[in-house]
Structures are given as C-alpha cells and as structure tokens.
Image 1: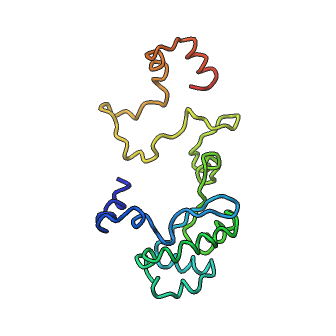
Image 2: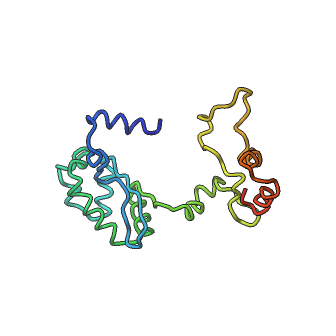
Image 3: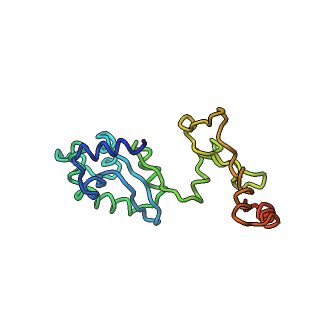
Length: 188
C-alpha cells in the first residue's frame, strides 16, 4: 500500500520509462566528499528555493523555467549534475548541518552499523540493548505499524520471535545437543 502513490503517479504519467519516471531534479541520493551519501528531497517550491540559496545557485532559483516541480524534473539534466558537483565538495556532516539549517529536506544515508546508533531510534528504544551494551536480538520490535498487523482468531498478539526455532530445527534433522550448543552460543 505504501507504493500506491508512486503507482498512481506512474499511471497518471502514462507509464513513462524508468529513467523518466525515477528521474527527479532535486531528489535522490548524492555522494559527499568523504564517500558517504545523503538523501535529498526538495519537492516543494520553497524547499527548492532554500536548496538553491544554501548552495549559492542564485541563477537556478531565479530561472522561470524551473519554477515548479514538473518543470524542474523536465530539466533534471541541467540540475542534477550541478547538485552532484556541489555536494561532492564537502563531507556528509557539513551538508546535513548546512541543509538542515536552511530548511531543506536532507538526511544521511546510513548503513546497518550506524543505523543502530541513530539518536532518534535509540531514544525510542528501537534497538533494545543487553546489559553488555549489544543489541538484544531476541527483543527487537517486529513490524512497527502495529495497527496493520492482524491478530489471530483468538485475538492474541503475534507469537514471540524464535518461539518455534527448536521445533523447526528438529524437523530439519538437527539433534538436540547441537541445537542446545547453538542456543548457548547465542546464535539462536
């Protein structure tokens, strides 16, 4: 269902090629000088102007042929190379700070290691920690939109993560002592 807006846009645009459909002017992933990446999403006109001002692109901000989202997308071949070149001139932290202060939708693209240290996710205890400070894999949250998760016939919540692991491994032919060793080692 989360893809429905994109699907409807695709149909409304008469099923354009992937390049045309996915090509957005001030939207996408851009590499920074330190080899990291940021996500930029300047859809609305005011975000576009904020982005141009933050990057010193006065000529693009005042260009009447770029005064709306559709015209910017049609002219993405003029815009994207300049964005790439400008963003490549500084490190990720510089851009996230500068563009955030300029009210431009920007976020760092994270990998799994630094995702677990995201301040907002830590604050929400998204990755519960053990006493040793490691991620408690047995207590990770399941699908976070609980209103969309259906309850079973008895009305009970979904089953605990790993509840059937022992039985499944036995069915696959693994012996109890080997399963016990996996559990002791923290693998299951």
